[in-house]
Image (cartoon, rainbow, N blue to C red):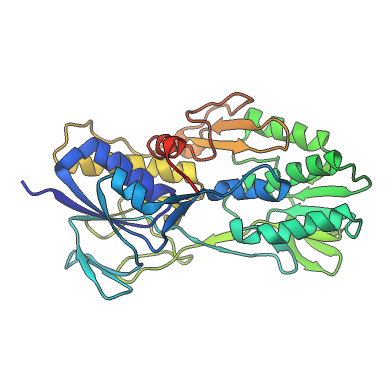
Length: 373
């Protein structure tokens, strides 16, 4: 039998976890084509630590990852998927046939709060560098870290607040007030349980005032407008972005541009089209969740290709996050409602292997051993 022709669109966590996992499970029963516009996979979760001198955003050549998965790499973007003709059309005019296509192109990050410093990742490191400089020379005496409505991943905001508190203490900058504003009922409620308790204790130890059940709306000069109706006077506001999907011609999407999928990653209403990661309508946009979705789809495709693997089970999310504090990091783990719930864990020791920011069964192992630049 000819190998099953699998096209994977994207160069992020979900896409790379999928091609590595599919090659391991299906071996030579699939032919994999990876379509991505970039030359490198960037280790973006580390961006939060860069302004504080505690990390770096490394690049890993996509060509090397594709080679490890025995995949063909096509460096362009996909503009249309034609399920009837079973082809994808690229921005440079190519038409690539598929037996199955997996969309893993991620989402756009959009600022929400006018007047705030957005932190979308690597591109906003210079803005954070500038804020730390202003704190150091006394031009800024108060900062609020604000989680707006629509933000799908809260952990980096807590990291920025904790890292800033630690940085100020280590550089002997005193008299700065720090606040964290969140619509959550408790700190880092995406995890809940013991993880929320641990984060609350860290915020208190860092002297960070916490405003829960409060929506930040807009910055007017030195005033942060909040809902319920009140204000917070601060010199600077740092905010998380919201995620928005990238609609692809030929595929269904919701009003925010995300692809509707079931628990096996199948896109609603189209055959042999799958999606994983931030482009899906999964409410939590996070690399570890993308990797778990990719593992389910990889097993399903390997089974379809004739590999001797178990029947895939529906995706039940396990939320894992490495929280950087400026001191000892915390490893957090919980099962959201879709994972049937469980008491959240918080530990100073790794709760997964390798204990990095990206908890991916296949990609994590690859990155731990791969050359980077």
